[in-house]
Length: 380
Image (tube, rainbow, N blue to C red; front, side):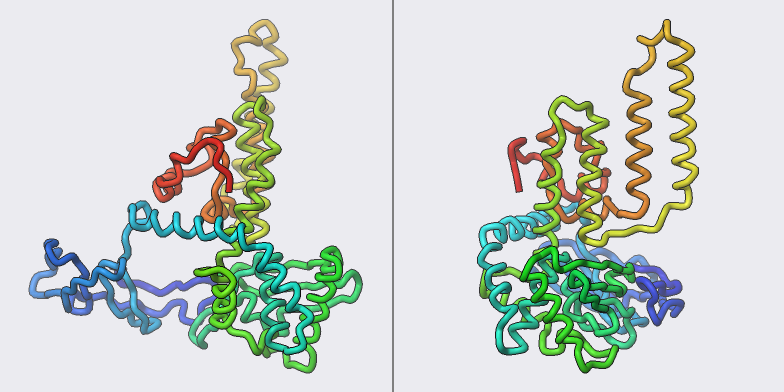
């Protein structure tokens, strides 16, 4: 249970700095099995608000917090088998999408030129979510951070240039991460030009604060998607496209290359997925000094190799090369959050005989323990 303190929120939250009050046992509802022992209340003179036995949910306790007035839950750990099962089902749904993606893309491509506004908006939103990997977006209240996704884009977030059907999107995405991207839709042929014209027409005669997709809601979009594939929702497209992108990039790794080369190749592929999904991070405080240390180490090793030609055999042959590769990898990774991107896709690391520990941190290995025993010839 969260201790009292100041509320931070995500991004530029309007309630940042609000006092979070201490949660008393009388405010907490405990959920345990019928035959399980109820955890004792360790605060003298207090007792739990209620003890229930609800086996249709996965939370263990909940209480009402005072800042947003919402409900906070205590969930199972990310490394638990229950959570692992849910993650596995999520990825399997993305794999099933591969069998339906052609039908779905034909559906929204045909709908781009539909006569009715609703179908055109729905089809255009589907294209944006699929091709540009935007999150679907949900409506926000006045007391929540102003973050948006595809369905909640406003006119002020888009600008148009007729040259090469250039579309510029600029807004705050999840966790208030800025999304700034200029796309030349002409490269997608007639479909891209139609998307450009649709978006421009959706913005016509509207004020900057008005929604671009004013006739479309997330619920209606997901309802249509589930009619094309049972259980499908818009958010599955990000997992699907991220997995497809990573698998497409990974086969470039040559079987004969050493592990250091393979790790950098994997990170480079994963970085492209991070860019696709707009996974960003701020530059770490010690990033500059880390690169300087790598440069110094590389220079020292090269000097030693030049001075100690007679003892060349004793020097680890690939060490300078590994340092150089790590430096190049660090330079490229200064703004793409590849660790966050790893949450969205499977890899073929075992195929290339790279130790799992070299590319996945311990936390992810524990969270996705169910995926560690896949066959070496597995593919998304």
